[in-house]
Image 1: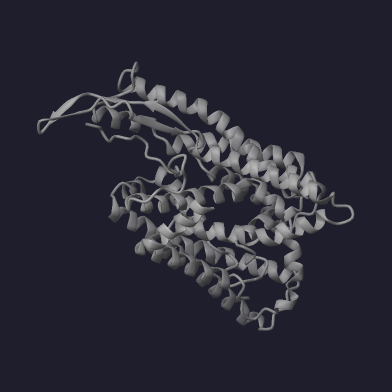
Image 2: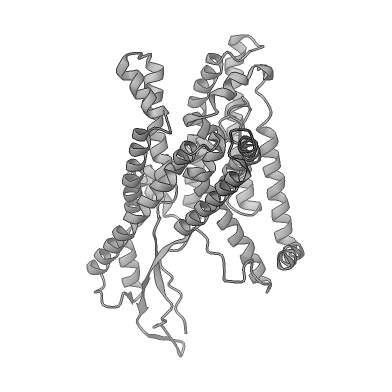
Length: 451
């Protein structure tokens, strides 16, 4: 505790870091306040049916991502998710469209162009999603106090503006605050439901049929174990040793450092496979629901893809996560490019010929570590279903795995790593005695040659 207090004092002594943290907290507070401001023309007293709809299932996951804004019919009901969708689309387009791929390689100017296109695409996606959200409000018998002809365009404009405002808050946090703003907005939305879910789970376990305090402690212990395993998955790397040819520059000899390596991440795809898989699981339900299909087969499919506790839902979900992990890793990690970069820098992997042999070796190692990583990722993604089956409250079970847990772990590690960098740069101790915090992001090759 003494060390923790000393660390907080050191953080407060760094004026720049203190101002960044305060700005970040202030912007996050604004976002949370906005998540509870109801859309104009809606009676807040009539939202009970909407909240009941989002207590479980896929809509429950979406509501958790927005911190309850979805169920509150808030001006930020769509949250930052349209921006995430636009970013994913831009990533995919960057792999298929040469002009966008060229922008991504143009440095800062290219990044600004890509960001501008992403913003425009975010507006388009939000404008397309807003009518669907409003139609769902009406289907849940939410009381509308404005005429229909006025409410629809007003609600669409407000929802679109809310998403743009959330996007702006995220970008301000990234530029002027601490951590990645978009990720922090998602994490804050997820954590916002934690206190209520925790208290509900505690109350249910202390009830007559709940199992008592011992069972609740066992659940918390299991949650901590899952969190530790998730941290291990996020940070796990396979280090490939690299050597560089000796060279002399300005009378100083460089190269041949034994500490250089290529850090191949066990989970290079991050949470993207889970996001892709969840998006695909949404498609059959959405299409069948809006098509008006009511036959036995259609009803069975809707039930299958809506029951997040069902065997076949979780089996298909886990299988897609494994497949998407391999696909996204192959797209994100270009072993041929890594081999070429090593060759141009005079580097080589001991015992492996530069060029094609190096690329094949890296691809083989990456495939071997991705397989267990993908299985572990799939297991973490479906743990909430096992938690529900074990009697854990539906809302609290979401924190046992899936996208929510991995996002929280990754964002916390990134933010703490930035804070620790400030402390170390000012000659203070880091946040941990055992070593530096590793961020979830790592460069493909550490090419800093030691003297």
